[in-house]
Amino acid sequence: MRKNILFFLLFTLYYFVSYSQPKYEFRGVWIATVDNIDWPPPHTFNVDSQKADYISQLDLHKQNGMNAVIVQVRPATDAFYPSPYEPWSQWLTGKQGQPPVPYYDPLQFMIEEAHKRGFEFHAWCNPYRANFSIGKASIAPAHITKLHPEWFLKYGSTLYFDPGNKEGQQWVVNVISDMVRRYDIDAVHMDDYFYPYRIAGKEFPDTASYRLYGNGMNKEDWRRSNTDSIIFKLSRAIKQEKPWVKFGISPFGVWRNLDKDPEGSATKAGVTNYDDLYADILVWLRQGWIDYVAPQIYWEIGFNRAAYEVLLDWWSKHAYGRQLYIGHGIYKFEENNKAWHDPTQLPRQIQLLRQYPTVQGSIYFSSKTFYSNPYGWNDSLQNNYYKEPALIPPMDWLPKKPK
Figure: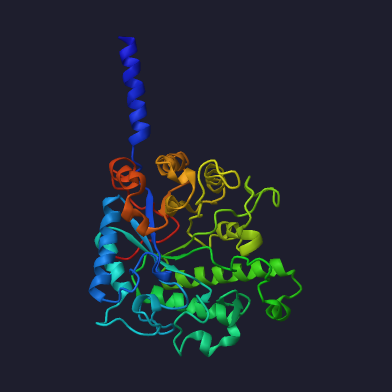
């Protein structure tokens, strides 16, 4: 009899741990538009087809238990909406500056469809990328790179805003402020592209800007101060327009390695936010400039240079009271990587993050990956991990959105 009772209690505990659903959990999906990664499908310029494909993606994510989409609406100093500052995106209509025919406002449409399904809509913007592929990208005559070429720097095959140029910074702030003012978005979202990823053997060509504006700082600290500057300006501008709109950053998964800084993670990453992208996310979290952080921990459990579980633990201790969502690299199932061919990889990642009270959810890169239901992960979400719907975790420091 005692054995039966013990078995029942153990089974009940196992069931509760395995299948209990949090009441509040952020469950987001990135929908990338640059180079038509997720939407709209390549060479799909028919408006009805674009709308149908977006709705199909939302319905799949709803079925999977998601409650937010993070949609890229400004991939390269262009727009997926009618902007007074920047031209229509080439990835929407095939030619930069050309509006959709018949005319519609994709951003308004996407927000409305997301909200119909109870999703939050996070407007994902790239701050500094201006010409995605020099000589190949479609660039409109009135594009800002044509009007103010002195604001931009060429690095590799891409043209970027000079992060040290304050006029360029203000342009970005104006663009984001306008979007927040006119659209019913729930958040502004930026990813890991501040200073660009290093190209071997090439230094980012900002020496002239540094000489003008360096003010005696060493170049690395000056670059970080430039990134701090635009984050602060954007945070202030967003809250001035609509105090309830969130501001979130999805940085590269490693802030800094332990061998460089005692505050760093026990990793051996070849790239870090602090030393290579000049993005000191911890400052932004401590200062309360951002409302959430979603580090791209795209590596697998046990990876020797940057293990998922090591970084999960590190970020859980460095959110400084802001919300923390974990970025999962589910696209890696397509790579020749044994760990991501393990059907338990994603379920185990979810199980691990739910052990941390300072972790409030997940974001998945990217939307189209779910089309193929890799290793039955859609089924795992629908029938287990996301079987019950979850509410978006509240942010007590923000005012309520007016009704």
